[in-house]
Image 1 (cartoon, rainbow, N blue to C red):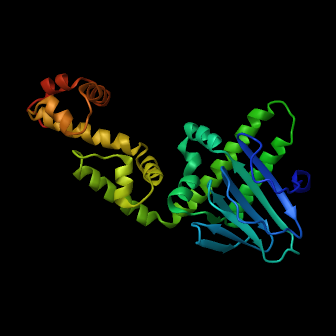
Image 2: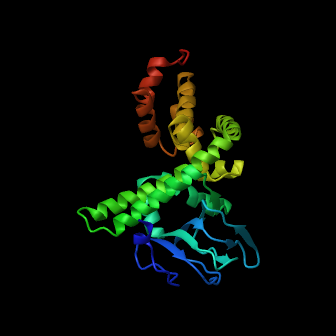
Image 3: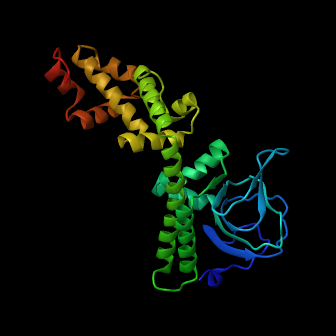
Length: 297
């Protein structure tokens, strides 16, 4: 099956397609390429061979990684890298997947879940992961399925290719995400509790996703996932709920509605009114009239 899907290697380091390209390479006596960078994302799954991957994080700074079967690399645009052949006589097999910025933006508009590894690569300069055998074979099967669909001219092939593309990307992201969160569960709970405490103490201050990610030295994508996975709502939704609860307590305690919504960060009365009515089923004035001077529930 793999031999039918094998690509003939060429030195082209640019995309012909506007969305993505995927290759299965199997070579002997492969010559080391010069360090190079792309204007698209490259995902690479190492299958077999004796190579060292060199990735340049600066003009004179690089990291070298001796590749093992199951190693997965994701390199963002502009990051120089190349595979160094330690033993060119050994068979060198790998999957190579290129995806354009435009295609990534389109996928992100469908779901941010597609972008976990890309965000980690760009925020933390983390480029290489190792997949355990079961995960390795699962990801390998997704590459093969996409290649099979690309080579097919069956009815609905364009739609099927998109589904296979999404399946491959989501499988890679989910595999790494699950493994990382299994290993760091305790740290994650502690971080989540600290963020909750920080939000609680700063409801009258600016509380953007960027602010909080910077405060705790983590990526904003990570914070977003942490809240979605733990509470089922976004950080922004959580902050709005907490601010609305404080506004409710204040106005039922006799405080001015206009001064209260401004105090807790709502830009204007219209946005506050809509959010309050959605949360409590009535307008702020109606709520204040009904529950003023009563203990809030």
